[in-house]
Each structure stands twice: as C-alpha cells, then as structure tokens.
Length: 226
Image (tube, rainbow, N blue to C red; front, side, top):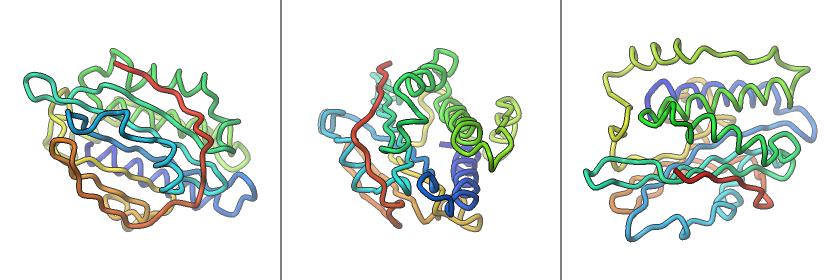
C-alpha cells in the first residue's frame, strides 16, 4: 500500500478519534484494514474474521470497522485480489448496514474500475467511510467530508516512485493499520494501533503495538469474491 494511502488512513483516523473520543456511547470510531496472502498453507477458511475483530478489540463503544482483503498469486507470481470482507462492531451496525457495506465494496475494491490498482481502491473505500462518519455518525461535529480522487493520485505518485498497479504490491509485507489511537507524529508506520504481517507462502511474523478500544462484533459481515 502506498505512502499516501497509509498516511491518509492514519491521519484521518487520528482526527476522527481526537474529535469524538469524549462523545458518550458512539465515540471512538476506528477504521482497520487487514491484508492476507493466501496459498496452499493458508486459506480464507482458516481466518476467523470475527475472532480477529474481538482479539484486536477494534473500536471504542463497539464503533469499529474492519476490512479484510485476501490476495493470491496468479500463475505469473503476481498478486490478485480474491476476496474482500467488511465487518462492523455491534453499535456500528446501525450506521453501516449490510446493504451499505455491499455497496461500498462493489464501488471500490470489487469494482472493475480499480481492477489494476488495489491501492487506489482502498483509498477510495477509506474516503467513502469518512463520508459516512462525517455525514451519518457525527453530523454535529463535522462538515461533510469531500475528496478528489484525481488529486489523491497526484499526491500518491509524487510521494514515492512505485507503481501500485496490478501485481506490483510489495511482496511479503502485509499490514493491519489504524489510526484512531495514533498520533500525528507517528502517522505513517508507528501508529499506536498497528499490526504488521510479514508473510511468505502464507506463514507470518506478527507485530503488534497495541490493541484497539476494546470493541466487539457480533459477526455482521459482508463479503465479495472477485
């Protein structure tokens, strides 16, 4: 994932947390992205998304959003996105219904428009989640969030000389990021809520800096297969 996408995930998440952490009952929204490389040793069925959600304690007041992306290697050794799932915490269910989650996935990571640029798809998904956060969850605290995807592409491409199109995602580096509990100073890779997966052939080394806000999920999840 590009520098710009990671920076936006951590920065905006920090802003949401700082602005909402004192709000009773619905404060502490937390947005998490996790990626896994599947192979003959690790399949999607081996990963219990709800168990991961609960273990990581995503979102204060059960206001978490977890998006999991499963990648596979094709015959040429290039990464392809095989499945995507989005799961939300108990209280977040009223804001992100199954229908909304399905629409978000269809318009971003599962859209043909982004078939060759997974990084841009994730960025758009993040921005769309921020639209929901500002418009639906905290309308009294924010002006409606707006974004220009073309401007983001310019920002991304000016930051680092890597092509994040089809198959060029750096191999062996898969991370789980979030921001609400990170500081601006640490906003790139040192967020307090940061987990990295370094996996070759499905194995992995697990790094964890801290847990989330103690949130839980009842397993309300929507998935899409490519």
